[in-house]
Each structure stands twice: as C-alpha cells, then as structure tokens.
Image (cartoon, rainbow, N blue to C red; front, side, top):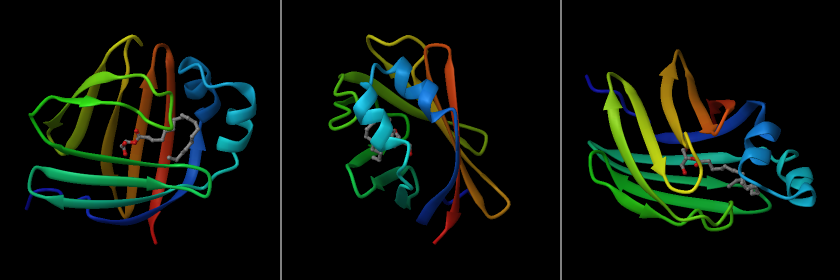
Length: 134
Ligand code: YOG
C-alpha cells in the first residue's frame, strides 16, 4: 500500500519556525503574528497528484502539484519569492526542492505513527512541524 497523506491536520509543534522565517527574510512584525498561528493542513492526494492547503486565521497558502513534474511556485503571502519546485518520492517521504534565490530551500513530508511530519528548510535553518489528525 502506497502512503496516503490525505486528511485534515492540525499543527501541534513547530520547532525553529522563527529561524526559518528569518532565513526567508520575513519582517519582525509578520514573524510575531506568524509564530502565534496554529495552521491547519488539508491534503488531498490522488496517487501522485497533490492538493495541500495550509490555512490559518492570518494567511493561507494553496499548493497543487504532481510528483515528478517541475512547476513554478510563487509563495504568495509567504515570502513572495518565485522558485521552481520539484517534488519527488524518497521511499515514503515526499521531498520538495525549491530552486531559486534562497539556497537549500525545500521541505519534506512523512508519516510517523498517526502524525504528519513536515521539515521546512531554508539556507542553514530547519523548522520541524508535527501535525495530528483533526
Ligand atoms: O508547506 O510550504 O505542506 O505548501 C510556511 C510559512 C504565515 C505567513 C507555511 C502563514 C513560511 C507569514 C507553508 C502560515 C513563513 C510568514 C500559514 C509551508 C512565511 C511567511 C499559511 C509549506 C508545504 C508543505 C506546502
């Protein structure tokens, strides 16, 4: 059985989100608001087709992609920098490389028990988020 990330997920921990936001150049006032948020992710997965909607009371972000197909990402409402993104499977992990102005930018999703994990990377910063099913 291939892994299925589909579901509604609530953030329960968010390690070094501050460092990740600083690396992305997010201003102080926005960071102050953003670190109080408890975002929710709605993921719809149909094989290699993904819909990932990250929502919060402040901003939301929708990403749709197919594994193995590079796409332009605009990061609208986040740091607003455009990049070229490619998501691939590494065993049961979903790995995104975001090529652009920022070095070493990307993220990895995986399931661990009943939890959804997300590692967000930018330059030398790693943010680790854990989500539980709503
Ligand atoms: O997820 O790329 O699931 O897109 C990262 C926020 C905060 C806005 C959120 C809004 C980076 C202000 C998306 C938070 C900080 C701070 C809720 C993470 C930038 C701006 C949207 C992400 C992937 C993988 C799918």
